[in-house]
Image (cartoon, rainbow, N blue to C red; front, side, top):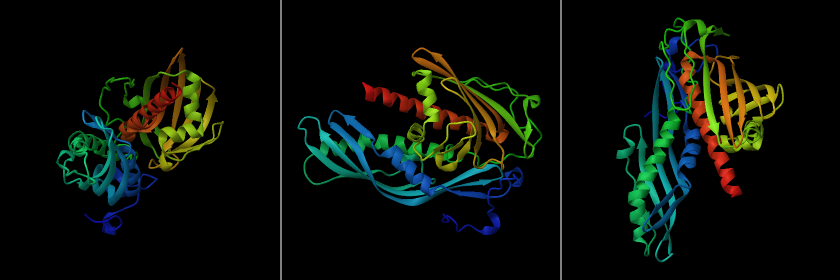
Length: 337
């Protein structure tokens, strides 16, 4: 695998903010190495393995060697990743209360192998406690593989947000005639008449979503307007100026915009964009909070999303916003109890 930055320059072009990479024909490349190191630590460190023998926990990511990148060619995403990982684990034997430590080595996590076929080697420091080593070899290996799948899923959704640029296809050509309602997501039926051409004359679509949170409206509203809380659920530094015209920047700059309207505990309107969308192209996002006693219904309306970014934008709000906010609120509730 060619290392990042060593590809033939004749075949690599930078992402063009003005969408001149017509129909995504050219090869564009994005380095995912730094992002991957943070994500691997996030999904692996703190992983708990419990069984009849005792309890173990991944305590540290001691070694992360390798690289990752994502390439776009003819509208398709191609992933390259190759990692050599070494984890530390610690555990306690249930019957005796003895504590032991060890390591987990993953010598070759790459796109050439399925996660189920990836080698996972477990070792333990000298002494008793082989029951914990066996626990890590069985249940532990299963949990580690689940975490690796979470990393790869995020690499293919979260990291690639906005990589596929809008095409010059006729308006509505790439849309299905009907959109299906799934889960808690409420999606509008889209026809060519409902699409707008904005900025660089790209076809856009409106996204509607609805989520229920087990928190009052004022608490949920504060998660979107308080810098410390935004940084907690996004797990990244953020710029949050929660006032009309105030700036917004999240996910290492992958998302940016500004606050257009704020009605405490009731409504937030944002100019919102992904970094890789055409230059100066923004969607308008309206978040409406419906107080339902101990619960809140959050309605999202996102207008002006490039058609080719509809799925990734929906995944961004579902996975990076709503699911992470739900975890944060539950953690806060658990801490209070």
